[in-house]
Each structure stands twice: as C-alpha cells, then as structure tokens.
Image (cartoon, rainbow, N blue to C red; front, top):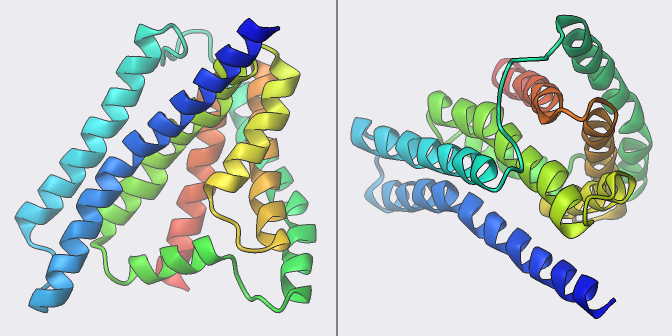
Length: 225
C-alpha cells in the first residue's frame, strides 16, 4: 500500500516535470512575443526558425522518452483505415455533442468563451500562422496524448485503464486552466472522448489523430471566421 502511494506520488511529480518540459517552446515563443512588443517589431525569420526548432525538439524529445521507457512507440503497423475514420469523425462528433452542456453552463455563467480559447485567439493575432499551426495542430496532440493518456494510465494509475480514462480526463481538463465550471466541462468532455478512443483501441495513434483533427478544425476556423 505504502509502495503504491509512493509510486503514485512520484508519478504526479513526473507529470509536473512533463508539463514543465512541454512549456519550453511556449517560453521561447513568449520571450520573442515580449521582445517584439517592446521593440514594436514582428517575428523575424530567425525567431520563427528558433520557435519551430524549440517545438520540434520538444516533440521529438517526448517521442524519444516515451519509446525509451516503453510507454509509446509510434508506428503505422497494425493501424486500420476503417478504425481511423470511425475514431476520427465519430470521435469528433462525440466531442462536439458532449461539449454542448459545457457551452450552456458557460453562457449561464455569463461567459462567451473559455479563457484558454480567448488566449489562443489573442495569440493567433500575434504569432506567425506557421508557428500557430505547428504548436496547436502538430505538437499539442502528440505531447498531450502522451501525458494524459499513456503516462497517466501506466504510471499514475498503475496500468488500470479505466482509472486512467477518468484521471486522464480530469488532468487534461485542469491542464487547460478552466476558470469556471463550463470551461471544465468543455475540456473534460474532449478529454473523455480522447481517453475513450485510447481505452477502446489500445493505440495512442488514434487518440493523437482525433486530437489532431479537432485542433486543425479549431485553428482553421480561427483564421477564416
């Protein structure tokens, strides 16, 4: 019992460490945003390359670490196009349907959008589109699925898939810094759908795919609406 408690405590510390590692490219980008704000300048080519490099190094670092500890090894072997289509589009529909109660609660609380979404929309007006797309569409799905699906299940919940689904959903929602109950429901519903895909398929690639599609649509809408 004591050993399990210690293991879970260390796993929580590990999750915090992963969150700090994930913040590395964000800190680099934030530094450039602050510098450019003071200098009244836009992103230079060098700043864009350094920002993309920071994102690339972080994603590769997460994938390398996950493979090293036998947590996740990305491969197309054994994947099914049929399963990919079902989890991709079916999961997306589930995300949109399950977030409706959260949107309703959000409106009852007097909010128009989540604080996280408002931050993204503000950043979207500052960052070059390439950085925004790589950060939200490519980097976030890989890193967050490793953290809140694979790591949470096998380290924080000691391999208990059902517990991993629940705990991963809660931590995923909290990671997006909800400022009210409506925001929590919205991100928890998304986390639940992503977690369920991982729980049913036992393949993190499908959860990453669903996360990728969801974020891609969100970013496209931000730029065209």
